[in-house]
Length: 229
Image (cartoon, rainbow, N blue to C red; front, side, top):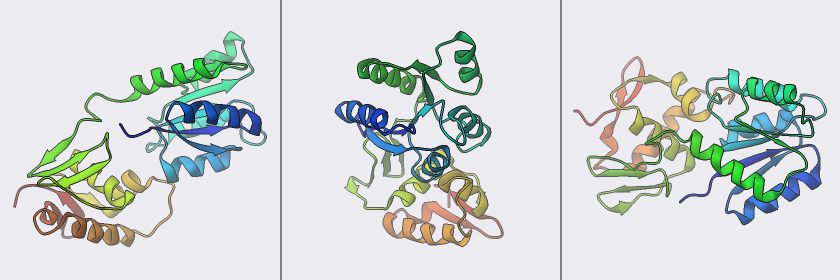
């Protein structure tokens, strides 16, 4: 199984390091940020599987960042565990109402943290999301992060992979370039709409002659993934 990526957001470096060591030993990929602004940018750019978020930070607090992420369509489903020294019931309720999926009070043991993290990830992975998708001999396996065509492995970049995964899970619908930017790149990434065309070209090239026609150009709109001619 492909390792899940966890973003640790805490302004105290020793705490981040302690958590990072525990998560890496449990085979998670780890990203780190020491403030809410950097954390938000990393969420958009790297699309982590879960956020470990400290409540009290200078500038924008963790609870404010949680509320912002839950308001934005592209990050609304991101699982969040709040880390805090606040143990009062009102604070826990406030954290959960802000959109946190769980709440861990400092100090905590690394074993407890990893166990709670696994539980949140299990709850937040929708049924079928990790199932392989196969269309006309083109196979995408979300667990191993691999794509193959008629049994032969295909080589493609991370953006092309995300684009293909979105298309294969949203077949027969035409999407504008703007919609694809929102869904695949994230709503807060400022790139030209023509960037989509560049990656569509790369994706078609990676798919090869047998499968590139699955990605159809819809004149005046954008693109559609379809097995129909």
